[in-house]
Image (cartoon, rainbow, N blue to C red):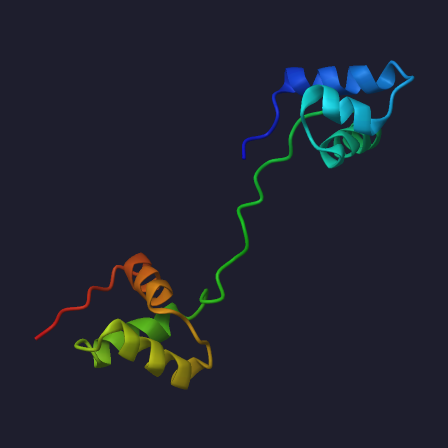
Length: 116
């Protein structure tokens, strides 16, 4: 979900700072969650600004650093199916993964599965 616009952030803080209202009422007024209003108040108090934080990028893959093993595996067994690659990967690394994850991993490495 994209971050709230700066105008909406400022309006929420302004409504709360006017006083005589609660976080819950401000949240209802602007159709946002109580957590959103609370987080904006904390952000304003701690940083003095309402700018959204930059995207964090998600969590890193468990497979980072194992690219060389995958390249060697595909080089040695070019005719394996995805399920066979998954079984072999589990035996070699102890990491269990689905066929779709294996397919995505191999595509990212630009490894094609040529069948004879």
